[in-house]
Amino acid sequence: MFTTKEIKEYIEEFKKINFDDIVNRNTHLSINQIDTIISDLNKEVDIYDEIIEKELYDLMQLLHLSDREDDITYGLDVEAAEVFKKYIIQIKINALNDVKKNIQNEIDTSALDQVSFTSNNSLVTIKEAFEEWLNTRDGVSEAQEHASRRDVGYFLEYCNISKIIYIQNLKHKDLISYRTYLKKLKPNGKVGALNNALTNLITFLNYCHEKAHYIPKLTKDVKFKVTTKDKIKMKRSPYSNQDYKKILEKIDLIRLSPKKQEPNKYHNEYETIIKIAAYTGAREKEICQLTKKDIKSENGILYFNFKIEIDEVDEKELKTISSFRKVPIHSELIEDLNLYLSKIRTKNLFKIKSTQFSIDFGYFKTKLGFDKTYVFHSFRHTLQNKLKQKKVQYEMINEIVGHGAEDDNKITDDYTQKYELQILKEELEKISYIDK
Image (cartoon, rainbow, N blue to C red):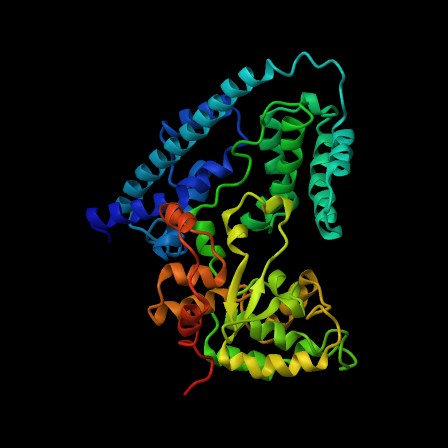
């Protein structure tokens, strides 16, 4: 059924997509448990043995084969199945050895770090440390505090169940076990969302290490690794011109309340937010924070002055720095924007908060029949794709949408000025949502 070359190619692809996933799924194990599994894998393993069931299922998905055919094993002939099994077992053993290595490194690091913290006799409960951290944070929005209380709240529940009371008793292995608990708590949670929850916890624990000096550094490698498989699942689809037209034609589905079919509180804002996203690639939070003063003119060119507020959890990310940018207003947008501005009297362009808009748009696009790969963020990918097809330079696309420079471009980005508005305007005008 498969040649030797084909089998090796599929195995390489399987390893690329699934190796990190196998590591992630086994980080909760102890070294002894890992040794036991490796020992079992080195014995005679049946093709249907549960020890490799998940890995073989993932391989079948890659091969697009069914396991329901009577005359072949897992959709493969017996000989090919045995060859694939041998490779799968070795890949799993290698992944488990990686987990072992990471655990041992953490044990060694923790043992060294713990020396500096064992002399503190004044024990502080994790809840007390959390409230102390909250009280030290100035200028935090209500939404940020709510997210922090929610995400660290999950951790406090886990600590209560595990009978971990004092912050000084916390170990790195507890965080790895909590990660497994969080995954079970949110079985349908995507890696990105789970890592966002862990980010708030990490910020709190870093305070306990760096400022309060309660604990050693425990937060290394706590987040889930984003595997190739995760990246494929998280990939967003761009909207076509026809999709964009459909969204605007059906805009009443988001404007009107479902039951009474009456205009809702933000009925006049949705369309303008969507249009700004389509022509700037801006994030929903950036758009919802715009004020009239953020629409400026320079040398006769109208532009949006995006200056998103920096969340504490994002303050070290390069992309946030790049979010401060000027984006020319596209000629197809100017007339609609001016009409909208003439109807509002507030300094803010929009009353709706980005969190509420996100919920409303999610319901709206689902009603229109778009699958989960289409979200509001897809407008960002749409603009990037349109500019790319017009052969606009990569660096210029990044500057328009507010992406940070990659490592290999960082020095150039640090020591050069941004593109002139006139240049950005000329490139942005190359794209259109109007079929001509």
